[in-house]
Amino acid sequence: MAPKSFSFPGIFPALLASSLALLLLSTPIIAVHDYHDALRKSILFFEGQRSGKLPPDQRVKWRRDSALRDGSTAGVDLTGGYYDAGDNIKFGFPMAFTTTLLAWSIIDFGRNMGPELKNAVKAVKWSTDYLLKATAKPGVVYVQVGDAYSDHSCWERPEDMDTLRTVYKIDNAHPGSDVAGETAAALAAASIVFRSRDPAYSRLLLNRAVRVFNFADMHRGAYSSSLHAAVCPFYCDVNGYQDELLWAAAWLHKASRKRAYREYIIKNEVVLRAGDTINEFGWDNKHAGINVLISKEVLMGRADYFESFKQNADGFICSILPGISHPQVQYSPESMWFSGGLIFKAGGSNMQHVTSLSFLLLAYSNYLSHANKAVPCGERSASPALLKQLAKRQVNYILGDNPLGMSYMVGYGSRFPQRIHHRGSSLPSVAAHPARIGCKAGSRYYLSPNPNPNLLLGAVVGGPNVSDAFPDSRPYFQESEPTTYINAPLVGLLAFFSAHP
Ligand SMILES: *[C@@H]1O[C@H](CO)[C@@H](O)[C@H](O)[C@H]1NC(C)=O
Image 1: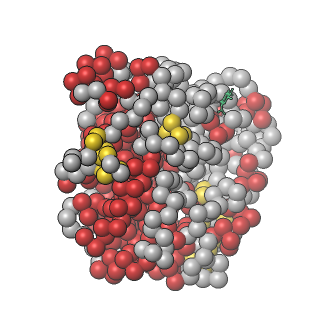
Image 2: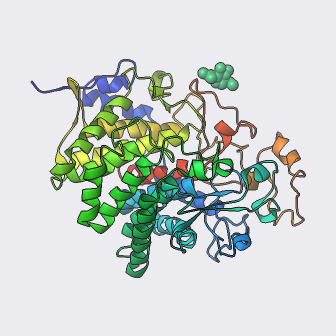
Image 3: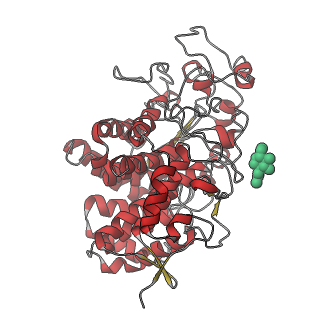
């Protein structure tokens, strides 16, 4: 018997009906979004997060050079890279994950980006230039610049920073296979982006990825043990470093096609627990991403020996579909006219889960489409079209199809967050207020009820709670803070939907 198609009680009512009904219903109801405008802004956001010396073609003009002495206390150049969120720390772990996902967005959806492709590639390079500096010395990875406690006790523009710029590193005696693994994954993924655009740079990235992966694998350990006081509770690797080793190997396999990585993946699948905690994907947990990435090759008919990864990926997809009760992924209440229905996971900054899980849904949907396959979920099956619809639903929620009727992307649509938890955005720009604003002098801007003076275009904030409430207030950082890893997978999603609205 052919598997029944999925039905979600109370969710996607139109999907229960025929595709004709879907067509009739959805056309007049769903707001038409300008996905290309959102794509342009989502990439522009990364310019607002830049650290270091800004180039002449910098488009976010209210930002200026910052942190030009980063690394000097350790005698190295660590200028550049991205601030992770609304503060002025450079955290290497989420920066590397951001880079991997930006690269994946370009690899899978770059052909849908039109004129924005070159800006997306620049956004990757801003990061990889930094990661190359951070990994220049064999056996060492610089994994953070800035002391989070010192930084978080101030509300300062990055251009004014006088907080501690402590440099943190891992080495043979203080391992960090998580952050080193993710860094290797980022370098390998980016090497694919630059393969034809800049072959010499691509080779440099790939060679470095190989070296950093070897270091991560030979000196195993969690950076949250080696550098506990610096990285916890901020980007503590709760989930362990095993997933990053497999993730790095998967990207190295894709980038290099070397047999050694295939063998590593097969040999370590069980020890490194490929199938663990599969309903999550983010800077800490790569399990779902590993399985989706590797499944592409299975679905292309090129790698039967990876079949178990596809089974894991199928299981992951089934576990996040709405209408199934599972403790880890919830959906906000669905109301009339496709309003509501946002993916929700416990913990802060929910939009990171929304964009990264949606990215996997979309990527997997494309891999399935090419193979003419669906996902078997028990007695039912989920079609590629359904996965796309679910991913699009999440993107549309972000852009304004939600109970509050607001976009969660700064500068997109007519209503969007005004008081994002972001130092640079909320303080007057250097142009408007050239005099330094000291650590505590920034507090009055933080506490002000006024909208932020500088639009951080394209920033997507942590978003509403499961009841669709959003305070739009700086102190509510879990809701109002943007992060680079919310936007990185969104870039791929928006690219696809701008080409397939
Ligand atoms: C969501 O936030 C609103 C407003 O702050 C609050 O009233 C509501 O209880 C919250 N819901 C949940 C489930 O936390």
